[in-house]
Length: 108
Image 1 (tube, rainbow, N blue to C red):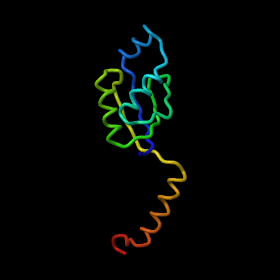
Image 2 (tube, rainbow, N blue to C red):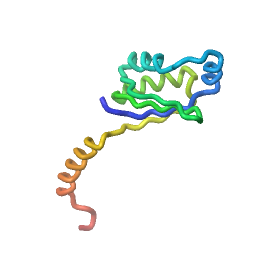
Image 3 (cartoon, rainbow, N blue to C red):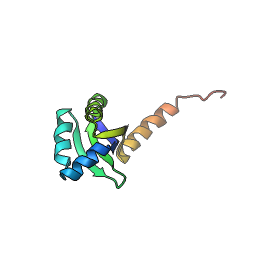
Image 4 (cartoon, one colour):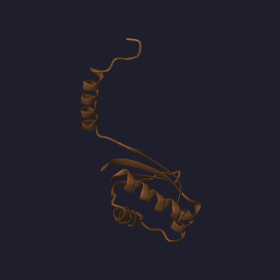
């Protein structure tokens, strides 16, 4: 499991649906994400109808979730990236430093 940030653009259909029946979608999303084995940590909606979520998931569960959401028609575009904390970055830099000491660049 790892932290990921997913972005998606709400479809025109989704916006029409929210206008017809306004509701807090976070509980619905949380249940969907949990069914896919993904823990929803945060979610936001931007003024341009982009939805951003921070989740704890493995890549396969994220891919399954993305397929379900895209197939629903609620979202027209998605992207995702694994994110890390500064503590995780510090650990990665320790490992990188140890490996870099064993590496010889081309021509040197």
